[in-house]
Image (tube, rainbow, N blue to C red; front, side, top):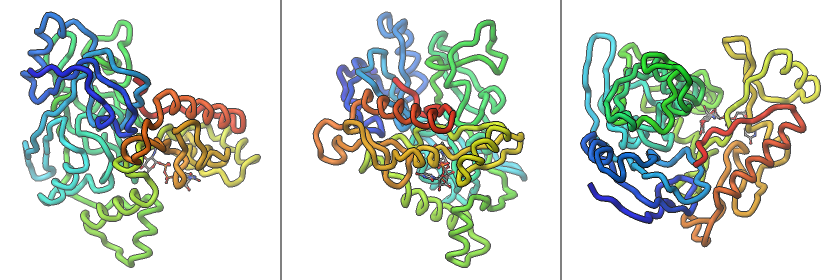
Length: 359
Ligand code: EPU
């Protein structure tokens, strides 16, 4: 086990915020985790599990022992007449796994192409895009309990998936046992491997407006999984900043849901508001539209800014990627986020909830 001290985290978070990990350990297997937990000093210390760093805001140096998950490997673990079950190590790049499954002839993940981050982080926020969420393809995952050292496996129900949410984003729930779905596993579980179920009865998921536009533009009515993958990559590249060039953490806020009555009330005042009726009777509002309507697009606080092409994405206007020294601090990002929340609340009476985890 190699213990590194005062490690620069700038390359390990997609916002490229400057911060250090006081102690960083690269975890390449379950045995590495066991070694950390058995260590008399590191074992009892608080831990911070770092995946691809694509959904975090670092507001200072990390004092907890940083466990950087680098568990690799991809394989087909099972196949029957209905589905392929594919497993990947938590340190694998999500996008590369999507690309690899398609190359193997196992479609089903193409709508989630180009989402930044690692395989292990995908269940934490139940990543999703273009009509599909991780939970729609999830089979199970393996993890290590950082308090007891025990390994365990969770199915989809036990992961408590919801829109950009899971059991891994919540702290312990008083009185809950490991068998209940309400057990909060925040800072407690280190996900080691994730298994996905890819049904053989594949059908394209083209419900999303941007994909329908691609069909109309190209005249391709029956796209292949690889064609959809390429379209999703093109759509994302056109409106989302590449974290390698402009630091960001994807959508900064969740799309809020309101009751039909609240929605009708807002429409009466704001007829153009972008809204989607949900199957459960609630209405989802486009947070990007709300922020845009408040005039935030292109604005900045310090070096933290609102992306010009998509108001839901906050960006780092400096940092190594732009060759401008310094870059935004986590504090600047959070000040900007709070200012946006305040104006959206004052104008629409809606509280926006951040998507990334603030460290
Ligand atoms: N809009 C504006 N102004 C803006 C941004 C958006 O008016 O500045 C409007 C658009 O015109 C559109 C609507 O808002 O009518 C929705 O925008 P978009 O299609 O870009 O999708 P989104 O709701 O902003 C969500 C996810 C994305 C995901 C896309 C595609 C959340 C929080 N975000 O974005 O996920 O890629 O749909 O499925 O649910 C992420 O989570 O990091 C992420 C990028």
